Length: 70
Image (cartoon, rainbow, N blue to C red; front, side, top):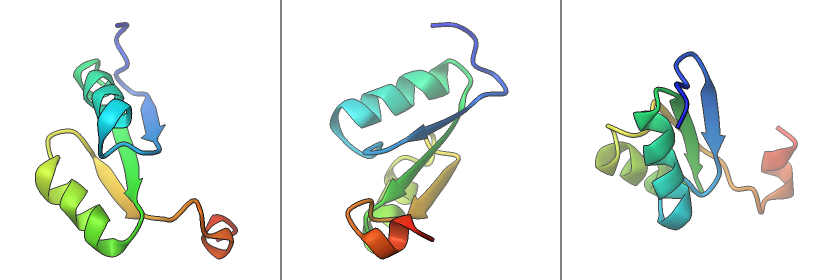
């Protein structure tokens, strides 16, 4: 993968499956990696379990119309 230093990757579904694998690969390539958990507990779980992968973890539910309009 190319050097992604200075780039920001926003990964939806970054905490598991293909999203997590992509997050790890992007991080290894030098990108700043950002994701979101569906609720506060899930976001905190991502922070605790994958602090070496994610630079920022937000709480956001893409299935919630009010949250996507924020």
